[in-house]
Amino acid sequence: MAHSTLHSQPPPCSTASLSFPSPHTLLVTLNRPKSLNCINRQGHIDLDAVWRWLDAEPFLRIGIITGEGRAFCAGADLKEWNQMNAANAPKSEPMPASGFAGISRRRGRKPIIAAVNGLAHGGGCEIIVNCDVVLASPSAVFALPEAKRGLVALAGALPRLPRVVGRMRAMEMALTGRNVSAEEAKAWGLCNGIAEKNGHGVDVKGGVLELAIKWAAEICKNSPDSIVTSKRGIELSWEGLGAEEESQRLVDGMWKQMEGKQNMKEGVKAFVEKRPPRWVDSKL
Image (cartoon, rainbow, N blue to C red; front, side, top):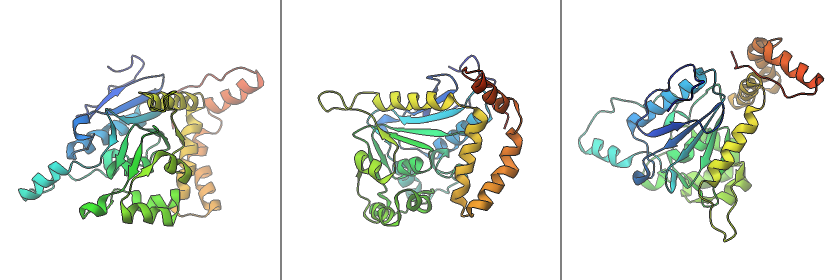
């Protein structure tokens, strides 16, 4: 059910359920647990539409993606792929430009948090490499096992992963296909935090999602204009420009759109008046 404050209705999505766990936050839960939340061709198209809607909907400021059951996402639907190969079926519905699950090559305006509740293999791992914040359950497992299947991780992770974990660790993941634990991923910089275990050393059910919702709420306390512009400023560094050129592009672009506008004035005024700011929805 859509939130009553939304300006528009979300698009239909065949591979995930949509909900709104806190103000300004969209939760996307991959809901094919029997298939370990593998994503088929239609799923990529549907999820691309969902993230485009997130960027366009003024009330929403951040998204969270997680999985139902014991997996976050086990990657592509290889059963569908095998059936297509057996039938020599044409790939009439190519993956959208935004990549796997509409995220792995996405250049969207608003941030997405990955709440990795279990295994994130193949395309599932490629999703998290391009998310803005990655949180993991203690039992989460990350891997790029494509080489074991005669495939290659082509949805965007290979050029990005070395910038996140370093060249040698990226080589290790891509060439061996081995599992990387949540603790190891955090040490490598592949995730921001790990949800706590209970007193018996067992994952708390829903713990990583609860943590993600807290992070989202913390981010949503800030100016929506600043969130969008700061995200873009960090992304410019991924485009191979020098720091001076990257900063100038940000100043000439999104900064000019937010300079002197309502949220900027409100942030300064609230600081002077020693009160919480009352942000308006971003128009960037």
